[in-house]
Length: 289
Image (cartoon, rainbow, N blue to C red; front, top):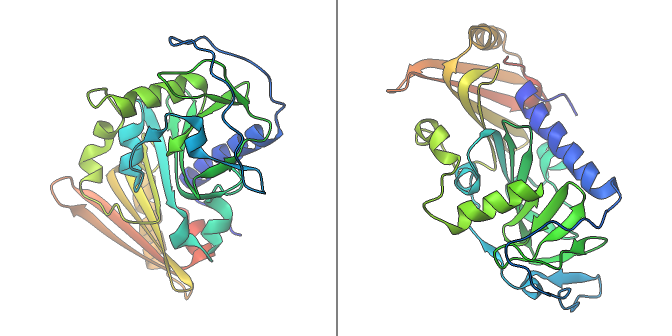
């Protein structure tokens, strides 16, 4: 597999580290305080032969749509610098699926996945499961709830609140995400990207948004499989000079495996739209910063 562009690589590496941390780190029975203490027992262990437990066994569940990066930002507390959304089904059979679909962690399929990185360096993930079951494994169910939700300890730094989607991350970010989802008037991360996202396609199976990056003040990137090839589109507000020079170079030196087209000053926002098509490895390896 060829290397990914810098911004994608940052998210993939951090997501990979997060998964390794959750799988490999020893689980520690830390129980945080709560504003709704009770004596809740472990969820009923009605499981399949493969030990998967239905989400409904955990009582109150998160309920929020997750079909785009915009949906994820609408569930996120303010402060998001980078975010990524993946719809796994449309990436099946492509090199992308092997690299960026977070399968396996819950012991079931993850159909839709969202990851956010905040300015304070913390991370948060949203994951829709199908079937709606998971393997509890070594996780610990906290004997107190948060706002009526069961809290699962994954390790000393990471916990889950389950539902559609499941929320994963540090306790403070998970609780803040619940607060955003359950309170329509709570501030969220979407308004910081609204101008850009109102001018792009939000149907792609891979979506990435970022601000204050080496590429642009803000950019939105999508990837589509097209047969045996891929199409990658990057829409920028405030494109950097180095990025402009790099994409012009790509457009002037196209190959059989890679084509690049760039359009400047598009629409009222003076967007720059970069379209890179070709072999999936070459498309994802094309450096634009």
